[in-house]
Every structure is written in C-alpha cells, then in structure tokens.
Length: 184
Length: 194
Image (cartoon, rainbow over all chains, first blue to last red; front, side, top):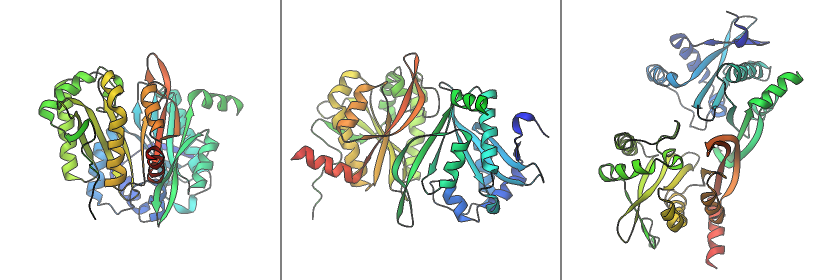
C-alpha cells in the first residue's frame, strides 16, 4: 500500500491492527523514558485487555496510524490526530517513535509531515497543535522542521525526579503549512 | 495550629455541592452563551443544551468525582439568597505534577460583573491552598475581555496563545492559556493586602 497522501520519504502511515499493534505498543512501553517523553501522566504498565478496551472505545474519536518504515515495512511508532474541534477546524497531534535506536533519524519528522498533509488537505483543518515537554529538545526540533511554531508554555508543568520542566505548546496554521510547501 | 481560611464561603458567595436536580435546568438556560456551553461540552462545538443533556453530563462527572480523586465540581451560589450563579470546576487534577486546569463560569453578565473576581479568588484558594497545587491555568481570550481582564488583575499571566482556535462573533480568536503559580499568587495577594 503506497497511497501518496500517506507516504513520505522514509515512512508511510497505515491503519492500526489493534491485536498486533497493541502488543508492539506494550513492548515500547517497557522503555519508561519513551512513556515519560510521550505523556504528562505517570509511566505505567498496562494490562493488554484493558489497553485494547481503551483503544476500542477511544479510537472512534481518533485518526490513529502506525508509522511503518518504507525500506523494511517495520512498524516503529504511532501517530494520531485527536481532540478535533470542527467549529474552528483544529486538532491535536500526538506522536511516538517506540523503537529507541531509531530516534533522531528523521522518521518522526517524516511521519509528522504526512499527518499535516492529511489534516490540511483531506480533513480541511485550519490548525494542528501539540504539546511537548521542554526536556524533549529533539522532538521540538523535529516539530519545527515540520512547520510548527512555538505558541507559549506552561511553567514547570511536568515534575519528574524532583525537577520541573515546562509544557511547551506548538501549532501550525494551514496557510503557514501551504507557504512551506511552496517554499520547498 | 488552626485553619482560619474559609474555603467555601466568601463575602457574597458560597461554594456548594452541585445538585443536578435543581442546577441543571438553570445551567441549560445559560448555554445560549457559547462561553458557558463550552464548559459543559468540552470537546464539542459549544451550543445550547437541553436540561436532559446537562443533567446527564453533570451526573456522570459527579460519579467520576467520587470514583477518582482528580475531578472537582462546585456550584457557585449567592450567599444572600442561594441563587445559582455558575460553577467552579477542576476537571482533571494532575496530582503527580501538582497542576490543574480550572474554569469559573458565571451565566448572567451582570452576575459575572458583580461576582467573578470573588469567585476567582475562591477557586485559587481552593486549588492553591487546599489542593496544594504548584500552578493552575484556565483559558480565555480577547473574545471575553471582561474575564481576561479579571484574570490579569488576579495575577494571571498569558502563557500560551493558540492562534485562531476559538470561534465567536463571526470570527476566529486566539485561545489564551492564563497561568498562575502558587508562589506568584502568594506574592500577588501580599501586595494586594499591604
């Protein structure tokens, strides 16, 4: 499957296979750093049955995809649009590359570029936003490359090991994204 | 040592348990105002809601508040006549980060003008003193200048500006996250009182 909308330079986005992919996510969650960078909640180990029930309930409001490498078809992460506000045409995006040795190699940036294209050209969104913790400089650099701009931060909103980190908010408007496509 | 602060009473207001049987009908009437409706139907497009919808939503939230300890909902009433004015809610307290998003909403414009500042102080006292939060934030914007100004006067700072993320009065507005830290609030209050 190489639908051009869902295919980038390094990865493609494919629909989830819950039985198969939740096992992968469970494997990735063993890496607590992955969880801590992904979410403001406390890192935890989740029962497979409960995780599946959660996804079966929540996936209705999500546009969730697995990130698959083009060269070997390996699934390496997931990305989703959620929290849609159809009145203003906005959505939140969340992304995680679960395979640690593939961090910082451009796969996340490529996946983000694909989902922005999907959000703006197929869903007619006007803005896409995310939050990220200030400790995750690598992710922020990736989001900037994809076109996101900083929109501010909540001071010290994440507390880990006695240290407070800012919760940084970033967003991209469709016209900014369109300008970026023209420039590229 | 004694606890001298009254959390649930101020000069003109009381914070009481929300009563779906009598408060939902009043709130439903408030939802003609999208700024009020948005605090009941968080994720949807704010629109006027039936009493049935408001009651169902609030009953679900109250049940959640009993089952979990990270959700809070209070009815704001006028002390003199127990009139329901609006609500204070903290829909998700992040205990491990000691942070919460909160909303104070008052349905009628003249009541908002008279009591919003006082209600806001009750919200801050509850969150920063009783819950011991490090920080609290709420959302506002230029589409509700009275609320934004009241937040600024209480010591809140604009922390995040999500561009074009609210639709009111036929145009897109920025959604502004207004934030206050516990330490800032203490200093602000000391300045106000001195």
